Figure 1 (cartoon, rainbow, N blue to C red):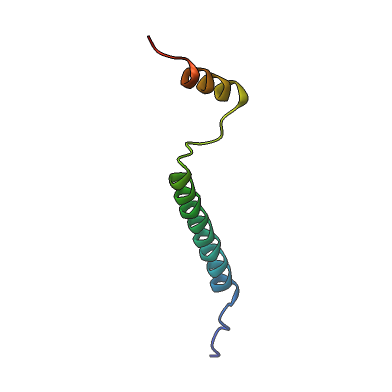
Figure 2 (figure 1 turned 180 degrees about the vertical axis):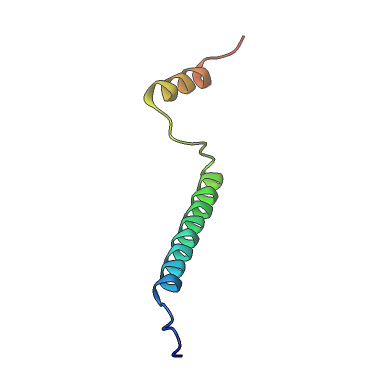
Length: 61
């Protein structure tokens, strides 16, 4: 009997998935480092930004 031809599709798909996941992990690590360095918790809308500004500027008694 002849040998079955080996499929190349599965290893290529696996490599593409692995590369995509690796890229996502690296992007997440870079984003976390940048956020930590800039001390940014996340996106802030205008209302929250104004509230923070008011709280910081208002003198406490």
